[in-house]
Image (cartoon, rainbow, N blue to C red; front, side, top):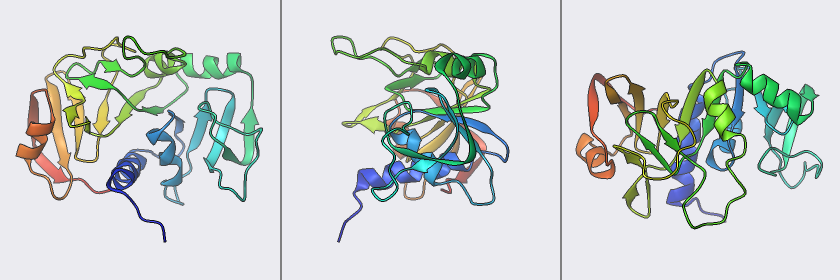
Length: 223
């Protein structure tokens, strides 16, 4: 019998909470890693079109071992399935969609995010990486940018007063969702709007290296 680890539970919790932000008719781009789990958490009565920057509009979900087409992958190389009526196109058309402002929501992970909505998601200096890919275009072109990530890495905060890593984009993040909390990025700074069951505001403060405002209508986080 397989067991679900705390890390897996945290990632699924985040994905479920992100899914609640999506609305009927949205065109949504999901980043690789944790954000790709969101496709499996959409309510059946919500129709969302998932876009992959390598040229697909109409992702259904991640593929399983019994339903796997090696020629059908998302931008991260993960095997996926497509909905009936899905549309395939080249990268130039894909980025015309992105840069033209036709993506309603983009969901991506982060190495760091800060109080100004700055995002660092692509490189740790000294480590080899292939580049930032389409993230720079997505966070500038999408109408809403959601960062979906674990609250800390190896016990160190990922939500900071100021990003110390090279930025992917400045001032573009609208919402931060972790396994512990939900923050809105506002002109006044970060606003804590939801807190996950089992955590206190003091716990969030201890795990966050940035000041934040506690919303007067702080709600429990429901995933």
